[in-house]
Image 1 (cartoon, rainbow, N blue to C red):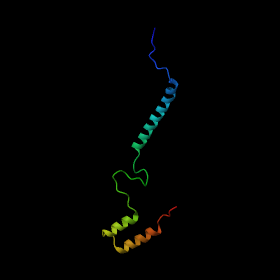
Image 2: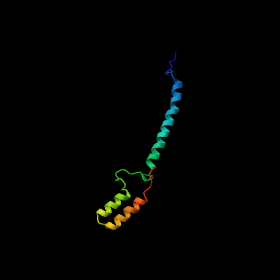
Image 3: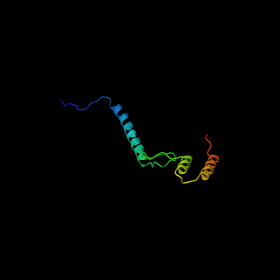
Image 4: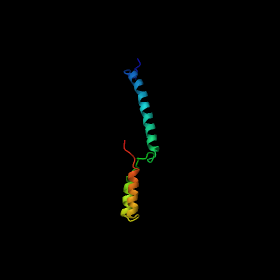
Length: 90
């Protein structure tokens, strides 16, 4: 008498489950490749790890005035120019 060494229960469930595992695995691989190849400066608001936050034009102007790079007249004129050309918020 021969003994069958198989487990004969639920074979159809495993056959339905395995394609889902492959789809999830392939999805993870695609996500990982996109994530690893994405350049951190691809968007205007993106900041790379370890980089200081971007300064606004007003902050740059304030810093330059505080360090003595520009005089008071230039500072005032640049501030007025920035205020006149500030983008509108939606």
